[in-house]
Every structure is written in structure tokens, then in C-alpha cells.
Length: 375
Image (cartoon, rainbow, N blue to C red):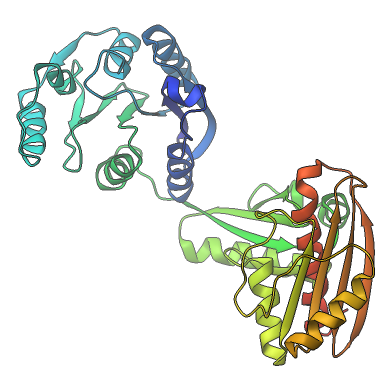
């Protein structure tokens, strides 16, 4: 099975002016093809440094994918950098130039002379026409490697990746395996406690199991490599069944499930009307959730009484209140449902800006468990 590396090109990325989303999209695509991605790197607009990075990647991996630097200006260096890495010159391709001219003509314009730069590719390269933009792409082959250069504009890159690059990779490397990933979401205990319960599973080689901690939520990633999706799904299902047996109610969902949506669904299933109150929460801590009766500021004292009063005003049957105290690095949580009342005072040891989101997730998990009759 071939391995791959990704090189994103652009000084604007290094300066923090734009966010690189291309690497994630390419990585997910490679994962689906069963290709192992071992390294990603970002290089500024410097021909020598890009060429050096390409040569190093070619030594480690069979597939090297670059994005960016294929525009018409003098600071678009990828064509020259790939040619230098290969020890060749660039050459003008009339067919690629015709495509550039045709694309620009759709805007009612005539291409400028400097846009001819986009029709130059390393000698011997396989040209890839770009019907959704003005930057043709190319592939340079060696007996071991395929160096694939794609535009940096995300939508153009995505189109060419799926329309041209994936079929090429499947044929060139006779790809017959896929990698399928399942994310199992947990809340209520920390990453260390989960690790103690499933540490032996994290030592598996196929499927692999890994942990990723967020604010009050820990994701467990199960990744299986197999020849068919059915086989990969069966491998994942076996590990997931083991996880659910060991972790029980700590698991609240998988893949696209969110703690908020799962909790609200549990509340709705009970036929309850929910009041939500928050004090000391930032705008990013909690979204306007569907089905919420009210969202109001709350003084930190007498949290349970404040919640009861708000529930009475809303004619609500259950309520959840948060009070986050960044100065004290603590939070108070109150859950009131027809099944009872639970209050918690929790302390926090992470970054102060993460405290509100952490408190919201823990409170949501308390309400979820109460709604499901597991509190």
C-alpha cells in the first residue's frame, strides 16, 4: 500500500492570513482510498525550499501532493519548484493554454500575457485540465513516485482531486483497500479514565483505536483498513461493541452526533419542555438550541432557585442552568427534571477561555443522563 505526504504552498498560510482547509480534505480522501498519510507540511512561496521539501517527501512516500502556487503571477512558484526537484525545465503546453483561454473567455475577457505562465508544466508531466478554474494541474511520474500539483483554491482543488487524481491513483497504484473511520463520542469521564478502561484496544494494529479530548467530550476513533467497506464495517462493529460494553452510559453517540442534539432529542422523547439559563457564558459556549424556552443571564447566587423561577415562568417541566466563574476557575450546574434535581460544583484546570464550553458540555451530559433515566 503506498504512502503519501501533502505539501501546502503559500506564504499567506504561514502568515496566518488564510486557513488551510485543503490538507484536511485531501487527508480524508486519501484515508478513504486506504493510503497511509504520514506527514503534511506548509512551505512559503520560495522555489528552493519547495523543491527541497518535494525531494525529501519523494524519499519517504510514493505519493506527494502539493496545493497552491499555480497562479499566473511571479510569486506562484510551484511549477518551477517541481521542475527543479525533478531536475528538468518547464515547457509550454498549447493544449493547456487553450483551456486557460477558453476559461477566461467565459468571463468576456482576453487573457493577459503573464497568464501564459499557467500553461507551463515540468517537462514530461501529465497535464490535468481545469474546467472550473484557470490553473491547470499536472502529475510528474518517476518509477517510484507520483508528484501531483493541484491549485490552492479549495473548490478547484476538490474538483480536480475527485475527477482526475483519484482515478489516476487507483490505476497507478492498483488500490484495492479502503480505510473506514468511526468516531464514538463520550462524556462524563476524562481521557485518562477512558484510557484505563480501553488501553488494550489502543494497542490494536487493525482496526486502530485512538483518543481525542475536547472540552468535556472525549472522542474514540476506530479506523479499519480492509478490501471492502463491508469488511471494514464488520471490523469496526466488533471493536465498537466492546467499547460500549466497557464504557456503557458514558457513550452518547457516534460520528455526526453532537452532545447538544442527543440531549435535546432525549428531552423531546420524554415530552418535557426545557428552560435553559446561563451566566458567564461566552457567545461561542452555547448556540441557540431548538426547542429552548428561554436563554437569559443569571446571577451566580441561588442558582437552583433562579432556575425554578425561570421554569415556572416558562411553564417548563425541566431545566438546566450554568454559571461559569472564570476568575475562580469553577462552575455550578443545576439540572431539574420530573425525575429529580441534581447540582454540581466543579473546578477546572485548563485554559480559562475553555471553561464555559466545558461547563456547558458537562451540564448537557447531566441532562442527557437524567432524560434517559441513567442519572
